[in-house]
Length: 75
Image 1 (cartoon, rainbow, N blue to C red):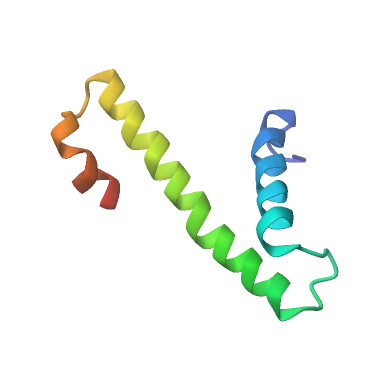
Image 2 (image 1 turned 180 degrees about the vertical axis):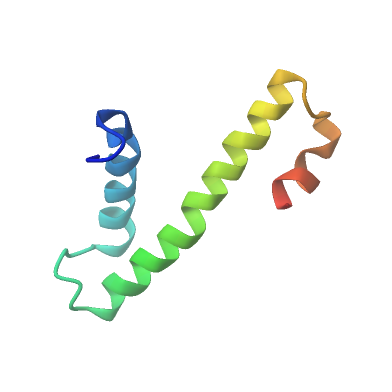
């Protein structure tokens, strides 16, 4: 938020909610469960959401045929 401002707070809030909901995350990072949960959610959920939003935007804008949705999403 220091770099990009307050427009980033929804993403930070959603990420914090997911960590708390699925991992029972503790900020101390003393448990292996916290470290693995942070890595797995940060390395899988974020990119998957980004790819879905990006490819959907391309389809809605007409810059990509909908039949190419899955191949484009996977790249």
